[in-house]
Length: 174
Image 1 (spheres, helix red, strand yellow):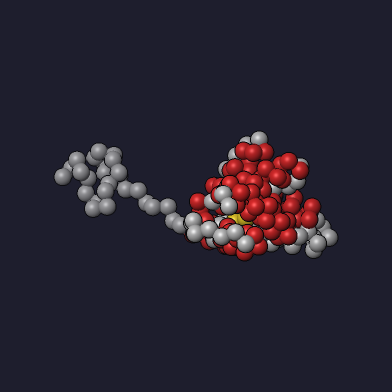
Image 2 (cartoon, helix red, strand yellow):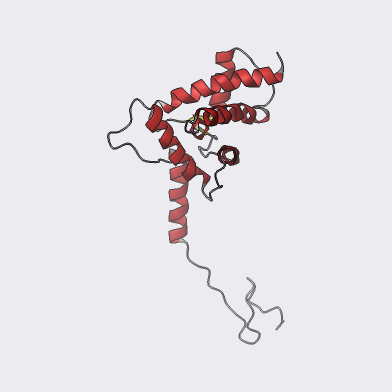
């Protein structure tokens, strides 16, 4: 089988896997899990590293969702640390949307559209855009660190009014 045919088959399987993922509110799948599932379900295997072909598979899904006028199922696919990664930009470019500063927040909103369309267990209130647990934890830790960080006291040379190096001695006075 040609690589092009394998990509087409994997893309069709990935669409189905992501559609099933969207049926469960706040569910998502990692690139690695998706790569394993498409090979297992299709029976088509490769020894090539996932990073060399999974983007092409997701491009098939992006184009299929766009063709059908469906929400972007690829927003349900995340990296091992549960971020969408830079590959998510392709989804936005295909849709002709501007690239936001926060790809993960945009993907959370896109995932909610998927859940609202396909979920069988959507909350009565319609749900909310939700970041995956690891992304939430990482952002909360960064916010705590920023809140407790003390600004470094800057000392100036009284004669030259330049910032003193860590040694505490002005380079010009020495």
